[in-house]
Length: 460
Image (cartoon, rainbow, N blue to C red; front, side):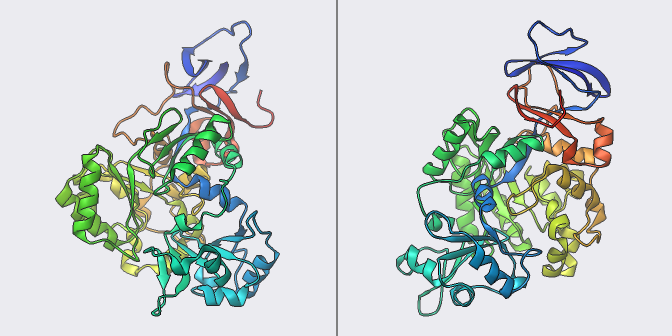
């Protein structure tokens, strides 16, 4: 393939792709039988990477009933949504996106009053909590399952609230089809993702591998929740460690996890939301030490006094400023006023020399990378209120985070060059024009390993 008249570093050139590789850049004649695509002077970029999402949960959410604002705002609307929702193949109703503003803190008794006729499970929009009705509890046999994620009443009976216990909810042998999610990612220019789901079982990994081999999933996938060995388009990255604020481990236990993981030659990727969990984590790194590749996932609240601490350990931070645009007002209501400046830091981390990149946390956060790039720059809530403007970063810097390889190296080229893998994104317009108003509609074509995986209408 020959990409004619594309913009690289301010120059208009032609780029040849042979097989899976970029083989030439310059003023190039079209070879016999070579497909030619007119770039019309548009920017050509390496493929984007979403550094934190959950593929299977996202695909499952696409076929679930949405149970939160703005679609659902009251218990009556929740009941209507559940009653009208189709059941899955196992007879379950699966809801996502719940927020307490709809009907308070749900447990089995509250859910039974809303919908008791079928087994119901609803996921909180944070992704950390599932809420089940009594029929669902009975179907899963939770009364006889001893698992720390099962919340119980004083008499030992399950409340219907499961904290980070997705492994208890596997019903049926099938995993969701990832092709619709993969197509959407390709339309945004994303050719690589890091799946941050913890403790992925062998069956889930086998499904991912099969869907890659079958062409349903075209992105390269790095897993944080499986130790491998893996190869090809499916690789293993840092080990996901979840610091759940409902049950934080002791310092000694966390030090043991870090030490054991490092001894196995693997860095850690630690889910860290609150100030308390961050202080615990950094204290554990003080004891266990850090290795190259250790990373903090989310860093939703990072006090100013922790910035140099994070930098001293050489940690990466994978942040989600898109949450501010999607539901920043809710974050402001649920955090202390003195922590508002600490929400989803970005600029201050970069100024301290911390490798920091934006990501989506899809399906729990907005997934469109161009919206997230804009949110990284604008730092506005869903009602237009500014949140710590000093944390704003230029749209080009946010884009560079998306151009950083999944391994999050401290240094990388971030440009299109000869001998690179032909994961490429062709945009409509120059890069300056696109970054002035980031919009996924500016993506004209996406290539993965030299193969076209997305072509906008009218692109020839």
